[in-house]
Amino acid sequence: MTARRADFAVLAGVALALALAGPSAARAGEGEPANDYPTDARADYVFACMAANGQTREVLGKCSCSLDALASILPFDKYVAAETVLSMRQGAGRTANTFSNTPRFDDMVADLRRAQAEAEIRCF
Image (cartoon, rainbow, N blue to C red; front, side, top):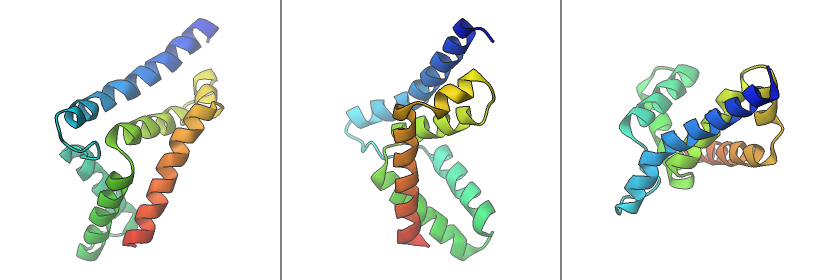
């Protein structure tokens, strides 16, 4: 992959993160809280949490609590950006390396990990 293609891939990943974060930022400007995660994002989170922790009513409550705690700590646009960075790190080559070796991206992932840890403490 040429340096130019790698740069484009990095920019495309950042653009994707910003595009996905856009609706949340717009809602926040309209008087709604920035941590108001869309329903489909909430459902995805709870389904994944239940897949990892069990398919019981008790786990449903804990996973819902965990999402509410996470949303109270980390605005949706920051959640999407950090998840995008994690996704880009799954790849191979220069693009994955760029997302793995950039302090700004490390900070975004660290914020997500701290919020997830706090949510786990509160709910599990």
